[in-house]
Length: 304
Figure 1 (cartoon, rainbow, N blue to C red):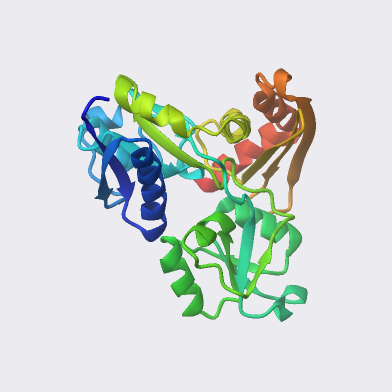
Figure 2 (spheres, helix red, strand yellow):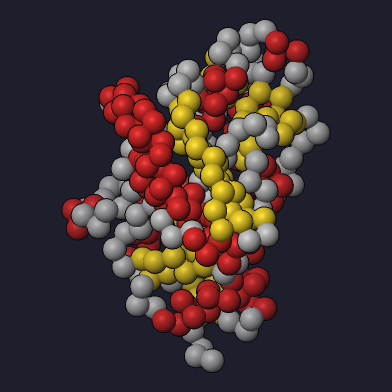
């Protein structure tokens, strides 16, 4: 085995470091040498022109993309739902690990408010729209920051609750007693999945990471992201998608909501695993042809 130390890039939040350590431990158990390179993620890094032209989007992944292009790191570990559907030139998917819990959960301070008025916090348009669809009397406020920061903000506020991905809280043992599973909420495409990216020409790292792939997880998240890419065309919108394998069938649910949650377009389909080519695209086309085109235009206009 070539004696190369694989430099693993990660954001420096507790959850990101947990994910990076998981990849590190797996690689080291396989006999590879690694080192962690934590990188502060800032959405406002000043990018010089050439990097911009590489098509880098994604506030959480941008810093690590740049570190990789500058050859400061060899691979990067991401929560897959944060990764734009188009990766920068020269960077490729190297591994998708076995997926964790896909559900969203509500952390709360008591549930009396569900029948009346209440305030829920989330930074996600998808969660906001689905919450308002079910609870139109409630108010949704914006909540940003890493998991620890968001829990602290909830504790310090007069909000009734905040919505989190179950996987993130479970990974770093922050899931409190006071929560409810939001099993009616369609998760973000690839929620609960971890993605490792590498440079397209780095055969050593690509070969190392090929050992970490989980086939069923990969099949499902690819369908979900295909659905997302076909629908959004580079625009952020309240889109949920979940593909699940049961036996030799793939069960898929995809949703598109208006920002206020009033309009909902849903597609539910089942297909054999071997017939999955372009399945996500077909599901997205069904949504677009059922009023989704007009709804996407309205969302883009409202977000300007």
